[in-house]
Image 1 (spheres, rainbow over the protein chains, first blue to last red):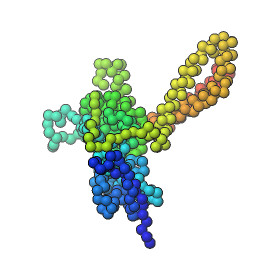
Image 2: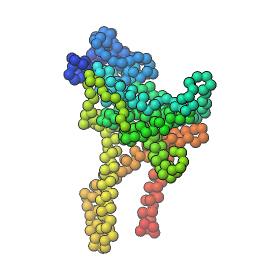
Image 3: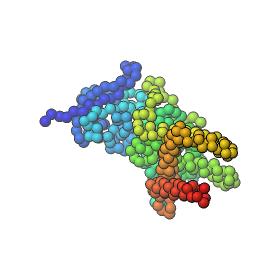
Image 4: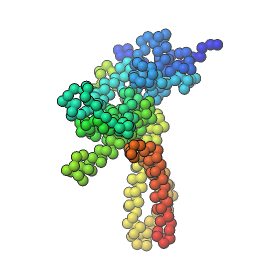
Length: 251
Length: 139
């Protein structure tokens, strides 16, 4: 029996060669247990070794292989060909990001924003002594539940690719960075909320979001960044009114 | 405050297309939700402009009654009502995402919060409807 084939239409952009992104079609073997990443690897190994794309773990953990598959942000290691076959599969670099080469996008902006929200535990007692033995901060299971969902983020940037606000306004801090800020703000061990909020609650942070909600739809880890942003809006508003009603109290 | 980093010079910049909201049905619904606020606001402004006519004596009141019976106003009101209902639905079904409520050791599911809002919406609507159609209260 002849091998079934699948048509892939892949965006190519080779700096110095292409003035703008172009598409190139490839015919790859169709295997029911293949994911889009396998098909891209087949192209690279057997058809065109210059095709560039990012990947690492091939198991939905590292968040490296995010691309647009038929117009939707997906981890290509988790997008099975059988969900598209026999129709063609269109693979493009993540939307809303500058393209470095082929399917590789420039993620500097995201990495910069991620650092800006200080996504780590901040405590005064850790500033004076190094982390090590003797530092144990106990939590109840329900206290872990308060933030656990938002800590599942793998920084795959699919939420940024799905966010039209980020597509139009690059100053926007974006879904994943705010979700991670929320994750640490909700952590009972953390004392860094006051350091994060000036940026998170600025006009470039939560208030830029208009609650499209697509970030939560495409998230492969069910982080629900949209919920994190809306809850931070609610908390910030509560802080604002509390500062008027209880100006002498701690916010 | 400035966030982010400047893109590299060799990178091909991203350009958002004007028809981005037609690429995904959920983006289109989002745009409808945003548009619904315009219809709600315009209807309320027009309604407030009618209040002096309502209370302006028998002749003015008759003119107001004629104007609100016009097909244009009825169609605009029905379209506005549809938009307001859609807007209210999206608002009430967002509560689960907006509110995090932990009772004791258990977090209340977002679906339960959404359902409670919908139930409250229906109950309040029915109470208002009863008041309006009641001859002794609403006239």
